[in-house]
Every structure is written in structure tokens, then in C-alpha cells.
Length: 288
Length: 155
Ligand code: HEM
Ligand code: SF4
Ligand code: SF4
Ligand code: FES
Image 1 (cartoon, rainbow over the protein chains, first blue to last red):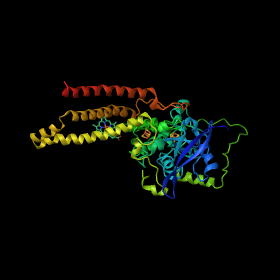
Image 2 (cartoon, rainbow over the protein chains, first blue to last red):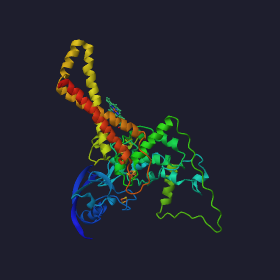
Image 3 (cartoon, helix red, strand yellow):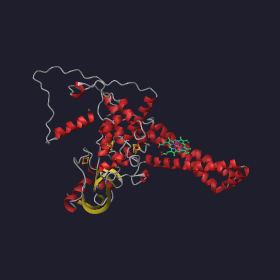
Image 4 (cartoon, rainbow over the protein chains, first blue to last red):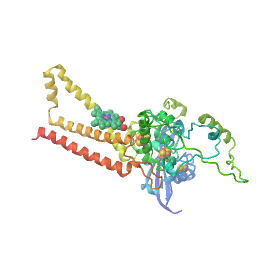
């Protein structure tokens, strides 16, 4: 592909052995449409094979390639170098998370916080159907729209890196987890509203947000966590004033008519050895 | 929620933006600046309140002490300072009303379908016009304050 210009990447690399940052500069040839991630791959292949960064899907879906590009948290794979309109581009590891190496950070605290708010449908009538579902719960298109926007989150932690509260309070649940709490509260199939409100009703929860709006500004999927958090607070207030009634989740759809010779489609087999055991372990640990 | 305590578990330093990150190294949206100004004016107002209590409490030590402490602040320079305190108070007040309403989920509307180009509710007309309205109210209040202070020294 034709090179249109040369751009310098100034990469702020975390050196774990020394416990400090080092800034390295690399000059790379840029072609039209080249993303920052492709630039990083170019460096790894041609200039410095020791450079560490994370990527998987390279199409804004897996949410692992988030870094700070020119001072703003962005997905490396969804940012074109030429769109940045500058000859030097500074790259840093994501903020507010533990550093691992170079541009790699440890997302564990971020994921653990999401887990704290119970990011799954909670039912009071939990039983055989809940654990081994045979049918779906009913939901109208209008009910889907109540939470659809918030379900587009790809857990990239860009909002978490942009938020000033996350930047000073390690215990703050963060925009993503709070948004996710509202995503499930707004879901008409869910019955866990009071459980989740108890979890988020704290200075480390929804009251830690100061409506700086940076989370929504950083989000690559238009999830708008700032909006979700304010709606979440409204729910807390409604509960405290006694307006919030116990919600009854929607019922199951009626069973399909029996079709001669039809079989239940089994889920695909695990392709990685040991993955099934691991998945069961996680299920038992967090969901039981 | 216990995360700070478990820092050692991650064997590595957190890459926190910290207090400087309030305004920090992130390219910011408008509300982020308002957030920063709100903090700074809030802290400034607390400092002013302490000063104010110190000055007025001199009355406890008799009328003479009160006269002396007031003669120190009774000049145009101190009143210019007072003008900035009032500017801070007015900003904090009008922005505070915006925050109270928005932070309890009012005037923000409903979630939308996530269709490109994505919408951020804070950047839609409602909240932005509300900020404009607050700026206008703030400017009018500030003009009144400035006029009153000018009355003392000029006319
Ligand atoms: C004029 C009426 C006032 C209103 C409507 C108001 C409103 C507010 C609101 C809504 C917040 C929370 C902001 C957030 O969520 O980040 C706040 C924070 C604060 N206010 Fe006020 N306030 C007023 C007067 C004052 C005064 C007179 C003082 C000082 C004595 C003050 C000091 C503070 C401080 C220190 C904060 C914390 C700042 C922060 O956490 O960012 N406020 N105010
Ligand atoms: S709106 Fe709230 S959660 Fe979002 S960045 Fe600001 S303080 Fe953080
Ligand atoms: S809310 Fe947006 S920025 Fe935050 S983790 Fe989800 S997709 Fe990323
Ligand atoms: S590589 Fe998957 S989101 Fe960028």
C-alpha cells in the first residue's frame, strides 16, 4: 500500500523491572486508512519486537486494545492515524488500572467491579428453567429500547480511564459497572432492582459520579454511561421515597408447537482443552 | 469497596490520573471543565467562608477590634477580590442548580437506539441550552454585583 506520510509514535512504555516509564519514539510509514493498531503491529514486526500491547479482534468488538492516544482514551484499532492530523502521536497505557508492561494494563479490577453489580438477569422464581432454560422471557420492542443502548458496551474500560472519580478513588465502581447496573435494572425480564440498588447506593457507587461526562465522551460505542448513572440515581431516589414497587419480570413465551422430528440444537463444543472445566468453575464461583 | 486495600494483589502500580487528572492530561468535554470549575469554586468558597468568619468574629473582642479588621478590608482592592468571590459563588450556585437537576436524572431524556453517529445526551440541545440559560442568569447576577460594588467606590 502506498505510503502517504511518515508519522512518529512516541510511546510511553511501562518498564516493570525498573518500576518506571520510558518514552521511545518510532517513525513509521503511514498508508491511507491505517489504524494506530496497525502502526503498533508495524513497530513490532519491523522496529522493536519487544513492544507489548494488546489486541484481539482489531475491529472495535473485543474491547482490549484501548490506550491513551494523544491524551484521550481510544481504541487503537478504531482510530485512523491520518484522522489524528498530527505528525507525532503519543501513546500511553490506559489510566486508572494496574500497569503490566509497555501499553498493557491489568483489567482485573475493572472486570471485578462489573461482576459486583451482578450483570445477569436475576429472577425471584429461580428454578430449573432459570438454570437450564428452554424458552425465552417475553419482551416488547419498546422494552428492549429501555436498555438496548447500554447493552452495546464492549467492556473496553475507556470510560474508566477518562473518569476523574476513577482517577482518584480506587474503590469507585466506575462508569461501566454503574451503567451496567442500570442496564439490568431497566431490563423488563429482570427482578433484581432492589439487590442492585443496595450495591450501588454508596459514595463508591452512583454517588461518586460528578457528571463530568468524560465517560460518555470517551465511549466508542455510544453507550452514554453518564446518562445511565443519572437514571440509576433517579431509581435510588424513587426507592428511598417509596415510589419503587417490587417489579415482576415478564413471563416466559408460550412453548412452541411440537414439530415432528425436531431436535434441540446443542451449543458448540469447547475448542480449547480445559476451557469447559474453567467455565464451570467461574459459573460456580460467581453465579451460585 | 476494598479495592484500594487489595492493591498488592495486582503486583503492580496503578496508573492513576490522580488529583491533577481533574483537569489533567485528558482532552476534555465541556462538562469536564464545568466539573473542575465547580470543585475549585467550592473549595474557594470554603476558604472565603473561613476568612469571613475570622473577620466578622473580631466583633467578639469589642467594637474597636471590629473597626480595625474592617478598615483592612475596606478598600477597592479588597472589593475587586470580593467581586471574584461573588463570581465564584454565582457560578457555583447556577451550575449547582444544573447539577442537582441533571444528577437526579431530570432534563436528560431517554436512552436512544445506538445508531451511528452516536448520541451523548449531555451534548444534545436540552442540556446544552440549559447551560446557556445558566450562563445568562449568571451573567445578569454578576452584572448586578459589579454595579453594586462600583456604586460604593465610583459614584
Ligand atoms: C449557592 C448555592 C449553592 C448550590 C446550589 C450548590 C450546589 C452544589 C452541588 C450540587 C454540589 C455537588 C457537585 C457535584 O456533584 O460535583 C456542590 C459541591 C460543593 N459545594 Fe456547593 N452549592 C452552593 C453553595 C456553596 C457554598 C456557599 C460553598 C462553600 C462554603 C460550597 C462548597 C461546595 C464544595 C466544597 C463542594 C464539593 C465540590 C466537589 O465535590 O466537586 N457550595 N455544591
Ligand atoms: S459522568 Fe460520572 S462516571 Fe462519567 S466520567 Fe464523569 S464522574 Fe465519571
Ligand atoms: S461504556 Fe463504553 S467506554 Fe465504557 S467500557 Fe463500555 S464500551 Fe467501553
Ligand atoms: S482489537 Fe478488539 S477492540 Fe480493538
